[in-house]
Amino acid sequence: MTTKPTITYEDFAKIDLRIATILAAEPHPNADKLLKLQIDLGGEQRQLCAGIRQYYDPASLVGKQIVVVTNLAPRTLRGEVSNGMLLAASETDSGETRNIVILQPAQPVKPGSPVS
Image (tube, rainbow, N blue to C red; front, side, top):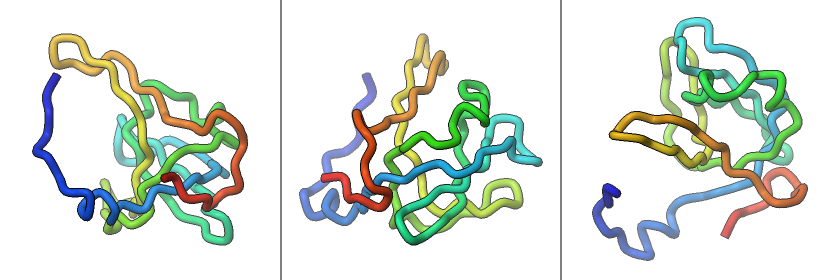
């Protein structure tokens, strides 16, 4: 297991994690590994790009709830703006990713709810 440097509580407290509902999902037009997701954060809609295309059928994601880092600076990925990042666990074998599993709440939660 690779560990990253220790951060302070104050660093961690800066991260804004919220529940979002996926409204739409489609393959990114310019990247084989990315999906474009339209999400609802409870009164605000955003687009995310996520490297989960090999592991999820876009249609199966619509309506699912996910955990999103909402205060990450926007980034353009292959011509599409990603405004946040979903949380997922990745299983690796000899340094190679075997599976990615999106983190989801155990039961439905109002979109925009903070994760603490």
